[in-house]
Length: 311
Image (cartoon, rainbow, N blue to C red; front, side):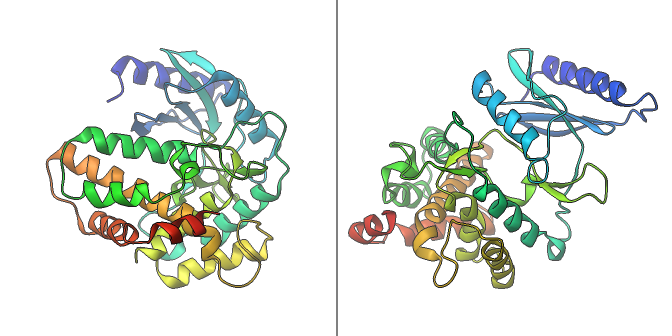
């Protein structure tokens, strides 16, 4: 849990930032996220975020600068310079309305895909660090190993072992010229800053250069696990292709390009699920078990075939 002192300080900073933007602030406040990798609080139309404790100041500053230069793709920060607060780097953003989790039929799959394609087609600025997707996946697996024994850990770790070194953050990525988000899911989209504004991508913590297939991997993995309806996957993939996205061929089978990243995201998701279940002392739920089962199937892929897909 986040220390209460940090939450109070973050809320106070959000209030100050909101009042600077408007003298008629309605003063509504809420904590939007409280996780080890990010704490987010809202005051009226202003959001303050405490970034992960290990954030590199120079790298974060570069990512924030890029967000200010891509206002039609990424939500721009109110200030591209992070503030140090209680040992964390803090940034301020306009509030954007998130995707409604209770209305899956209205999920903006086409908008997400189009934004990704536009991001992937944008030339990466010099000096931008690698995107952090594989690093986050490796950390999830490390937490699984630290969580203690669980029957589901074995298939997850076996599936993880079939991946090429770059997907496990043990070697550089094979392609580093494409600008990537690094952690794409529907929670990374907001409509704003006005209530009826366009959809934009948020969260620059993992932004960088790398393999663009990683940004398509989570919906691909959900589809492969039976968690995303085929129609939604088709909408997403078609919109990405129509927008000229480079991660998959314009026609034909996309899976040779998506396979490694989709398997990595499946293992990451399963590792997180098992670690949380161990910590809570509870059994896996149906969705969690489905991704573990997918890992069990992945672990039976012959090593030679897995390496061919990794190329």
